[in-house]
Length: 620
Image 1 (cartoon, one colour):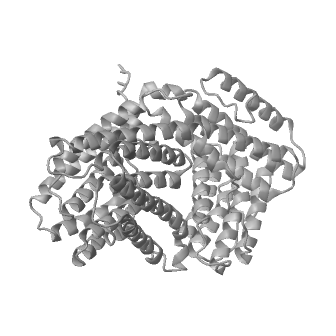
Image 2: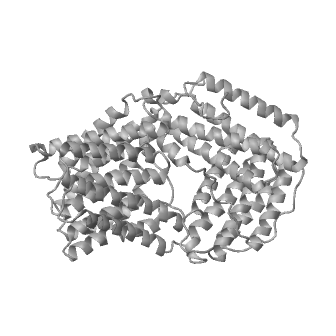
Image 3: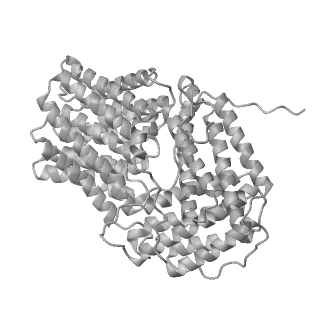
């Protein structure tokens, strides 16, 4: 007799997120940089007799290490440098505010700073990191008085972050010495685009096709970011860089043709993926592509793919410079995001958490609860990290922060009883610095490593062992953020999701209007296509995050996933229309009917959900 399978109980989304960790190879280059950053900086401060300065430099390097993610060297200048400047500014402001203001006006200033930093954090990942470091620096500056002046502390912090940035720019990564190691991150990112095109072509008509199309979008986003770092020289750079730009630009029509094949849904010959694979290998090895497979031109999308391959082969040979990698950002977009619905909602919550935690910490500072510990910065600094939505759903990050702090504090308490001082603490700081790049894959692991590192720095700076008080302050911050995170705010909930969906809808409308308008400007079309898919990817990420919140919060974004799916199909269909127009100059009835059906479905879905997308041109 057959028995029906027993269904397993699934964990709720917020708990499943807390138990999920990122996977991938160990970033040995980042591990090396982490080992050479905080520990040596602390050692230099101790040897020079300026231990507090060494502690601040080590903190600057630690926070920069959290942002030290895979990517190109030049992109790392912005990714590490901008948050470091914000952290130094926060340290400067916090130091002088803490010295010159009483408790109440200081709390008001910190609350206002939280409002501004929270709104800025909604703009994007770099802005979010900058907003976090601004507030952490302000909390440390106000809550940890020292003999050094504000500008001296800010310079020490900048020196620490700058040292890690120098290591990021100067040290080659494994396997990068075969070519110009300065561009190893860019080469890898562009090669991944060609591999993603090949993977999508291979998956056309199969069950994995949708996931492969999303992977192609992610690869294009990563390459776009890798190639848009600041120029370290005044004029157009080397032939190697011009070649990379040309090779990335040549991948855009390939991606367009592959997406049109995906939309058609008809499997193609395996030979169609050989060309992009060879181009990917040529990018990685910094060589020519060699002979490409013979064309197979039985359909418009296949003809477009073959034409794009020929164009890519020519671009690989000539390496003509191009600016197609740049993002098409309109002036004022960042300001609209910061002061829009998502930025306002996040800014208010950050302000409440940061201001309330600073007030509570100052009140506790004057009680015996703090015991021998003279500084109150831990509570507001913890609240800043906890209130950040890009670190995971609210309940998930609170759980991870609490567990990580308890584990880290207990581990440090045991090590502090055994390690000699200060040599043992310096070694511990170096080891933790090396572990930070690996620990960033899970918030609880990162919290545990950072807790050990910071407690070691505190003790190296002359304070007594602080594990117990730090656990208490962290749990208090967790409770505070949970309360504030569920408080009703002016306007509608789910502002972050609505803002991202509105941007995605606007980008999809601009792309559709360009294609149906009959413009022959292909570079403009490819740029609009890139912006549409990128906006959709950002919306998908915000929706997935909101869906993993507790049910009380998750219900405010119900229906968003369906809207995003319709927009994705609309952009896919627009891409298929563009390819068909290039091939024949007209659109068949199938394409027009699909566009009309998707626009009608978008309107129906928008009306039956709780989300309001009046900012989207497609709405109505």
